Image (cartoon, rainbow, N blue to C red; front, side):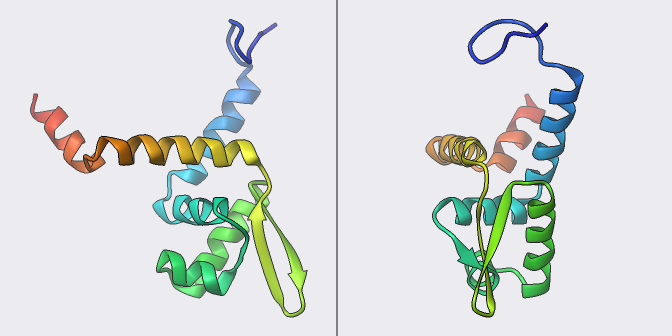
Length: 118
């Protein structure tokens, strides 16, 4: 049996499959931006669309996928749906990744191009 969380051992196939699914969802820059925005605080779809620069229907579809995956939740406030992150560990993963890339100060695409040329 696997011993994780600081121990040794391999995760189960089920855990790896679930992790791959979550990473697949976050592989979309639009969904990643939405998760980043929601990691800063809850928001409705209109404000999220303005913040991430997406069309309202597209942002709604991204939110539906994130909600279906259990990464975000929503609650009704009058006529608005307010979205928030349901999994604080995902917030940590997103913040660490974006923070590391920002700290490097090198665009990822430029890094990949330089790596291929080596």
